[in-house]
Image 1 (tube, rainbow, N blue to C red):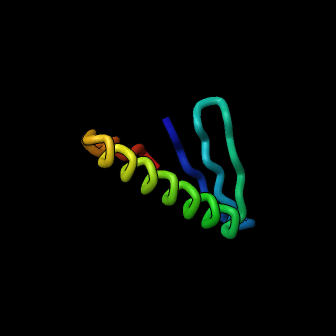
Image 2 (image 1 turned 120 degrees about the vertical axis):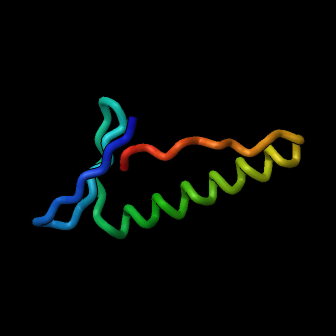
Image 3 (image 1 turned 60 degrees about the vertical axis):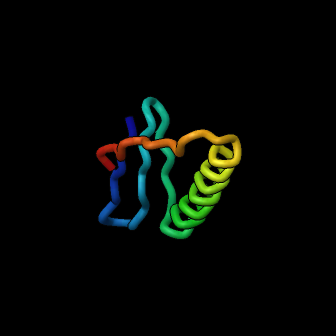
Length: 62
């Protein structure tokens, strides 16, 4: 579903999600990584509070 490419010339990362591509410089990538990490942590805590098992999502080919 998701693929990642690194531009050797400028250092930007392109994240391909289906028909959508997001191109980010390294600083933006780290910001998105932190934000998604916070969201995943929040989701996990919510699921545990509701007595649900944590999500076990297999890693993509990134």
